[in-house]
Image 1: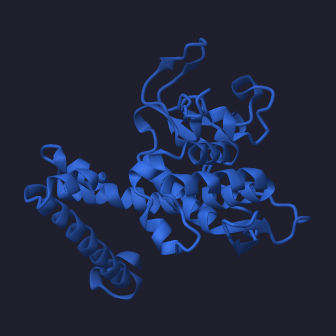
Image 2: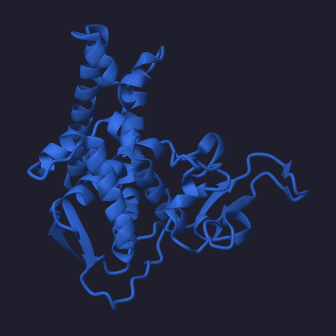
Length: 287
């Protein structure tokens, strides 16, 4: 029936075809605009400051626009639910640790010189890449959230050839190797005796700068040649949204006694959603 509808261009198949066309028009318009900017930059300094994911890929020789279209679509669509899940758990952890919430808000205020009368839109407009890079505690807190609540709690890879691992364990071509970021993020053998404790400071060095962990230890984004393509894109999205939210509002749980748990799915959403109270953040008053 699906093939018939597709051939006759009717029903859901016709609607799908129309929607794909609209998405393609938007993406190719974006790509062509970037190509024009690269070829005819009005201001080299502005161009260098605004080099984004698409621009960087276009700088490579023989970049196929269709390949770039597929990559942009993959990064955007694939990261929608996972990023939303991570942000939900982040807000939950901020409600459970108000002193950490306040510390991030102070970091945001100091970096962008936040004033009492600045609107949410003005705050968001101030968050360029340089500002985000100077928020190590926010980065650490997001990473700590993802360590305990990875968007994809269990993942798998198929072996393309026979192999023997460093510990002597052997796998055969076609074997499915399953690993669990959720469990690995809570292993004391990897993270120490306080593995189940929410402590963003574990991601900071003695100077307070963010220090990343090996992707084979912090496996939430996978590792190796097939590491998550949208990792940095996801972090940028989460930093912007988190900085705007915590820089503008104070969050508390709507019901402190309600038990918050995850829903067992491919991803790790909060079961039943997260209900919070948000009050405007007044910088001249303590939360």
